[in-house]
Length: 229
Image 1 (cartoon, rainbow, N blue to C red):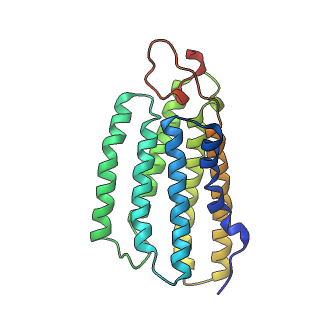
Image 2: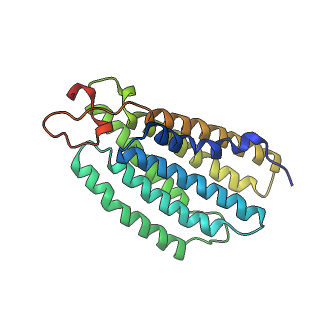
């Protein structure tokens, strides 16, 4: 059995950076706390998966359900950063449909003793599309420097994270029965890119919270442009 290098665990360790940033800044913003909780869900899933693997137990069933929970939670986070109320409402309604669809696919399509063939791909494509929608729609509405906003950095990190997952997972599924050295190299590279994505997300959570403008702007405080202050 090939022992993975320490760098292969960099992505898992980096998942703790966003929660630490929230604790350090004592942020009370719902979206920022939601991002930190999502990262903790990823960390808990990875730790549990490795623990089950060390005991030679099948962790795939656990992964199916943890992926559904983490994805639904991320949809809620994205709903907090929508530029328009109708978009926020649509995403919150989608949460229930997303979770129910996952359960139906797990029960009827997937073989929980093996890696996902349908559900993970659909989840990744949907979440990546919605993150890009959030990033692009918010960017088009702003007239100030985008790098001052938490949602800009977090969505950028999420794009990198999800693109990395979608690119490496199919290759890993092929290599798992073939070249193990190449598989370890692939997973190490995946972990390093994940660590970079988490650091970008952390950068967003460290952005100064924008002040509340007069007139009752409806977006979360951290998402309001400074031009309204």
